[in-house]
Length: 391
Image (cartoon, rainbow, N blue to C red; front, side, top):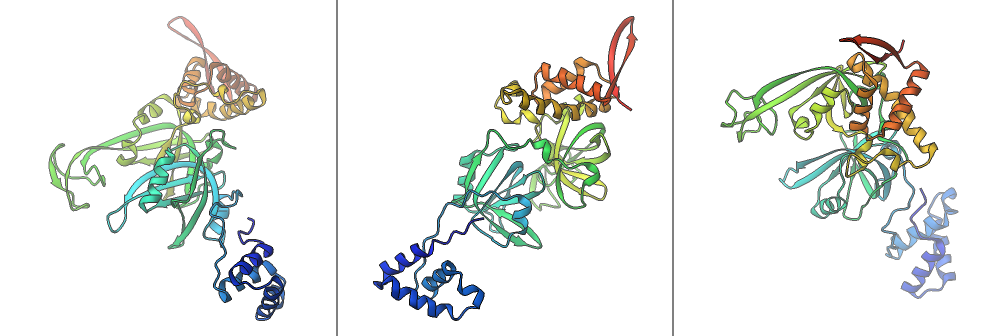
C-alpha cells in the first residue's frame, strides 16, 4: 500500500510557508535532526522531514482523507500492522443489530472473500447513518474504503466510520459460491460459508422468548418474565431445525435456530425443493451452527425472474455459469435420490435464476462427465427418464 505522507518537496514548502525560513535553512536543520536516528533511517528523507515538521516545528501535515485505491484481502487485513485508512472488499453475508453497554444502537456485519471472513461493527450515529444510506443488503458485494480495525481478545474487527466509502459492486470479480469452504476443510470455531443441499431434516417446536429463544413453560400469547432476559415478554411458538446436508463429497449436521428462521421466510422452500443453501456460520463440536442463509446467484437482482444470461452476455462468461451449475446439479439429484430433467430445471430456475437453456447445457455436461447417469423407468404405463448421481 503506498504511503500517505506527502513528498519531501511538499513538506518543505509547507514548512517554509509556516515559518518563513528558506528551503536551504530547513534542510540544514533537518540534517541535524536526522543525526538522532539510526544510520539506515537517516536516508529516509520523506519520513525524517515529516517527523521534523510534526515533532520540532509543531506542524501537522494534512494527510489525504480518501484512502489509496489498493484493496487488500481479508487475510491481509487480519495480519496488517496498519490500523486505519484501509480498504477491502467482499460479500456481505450477515447483518444484525445490537446494543452497546450504554444502550445505544449498533450494527454488526460479516464479510467474506475467497479466502477468509471477518466481522465488522458500526457504533456511532453518523457511521450508522453512512451505512444505512448505502442500503447494503445480505448478498451484496461491497468495497469498503477508509476503514479501520480494532483488536479485542485476539479477534480483529472492522470498524466503519462516517468517512468510510461504501460502494456496492454490480459486477463482482467472483461469485459468492467461490467463497464457500468444503465441509472437509472446515476449521473448528472459524466462521465460514458452505454451499450444500439438504438430505434430511427434522423440526422441533416449543414455546419460548422471541428475543433470546429461551424455552418457557407457558402458553403462546402469554406475557411472562423471561429467565434469561429478565424482562416481561410475549412468548410465542418457536422452531428449531436440525439438518443433514451434503456438499457432494461429505455430509454435515447443521443447526438452525429460531432467530435465523425468523429472517428467512423462504427457508421451507429450500428445504423441501432440494435447492442449494449458501449457509454462513461456524463449525463447532461436529455441528455447523448457522448464522444466516444467503440467496444464490439471483441475489444481485431486484426481480428473481431476471435470467443470469443478462449479466453474462458473452459465450465465455456464460460457460462460467454452466460450469458452476455442473457442480450443483449432482447435489440436487443426491438430495432426492433421483430427479427428472424437468424437476432439475425447475430447481435451478427457481433458486439460481438461470434460463432453461443454461440448465439443459449443464445437465448434458454432467452426463458427459459421469457426474450423473440416467435410467428409464415406467410408472403407470408411462415411460420417463430419471437422473441419479454417477458412480
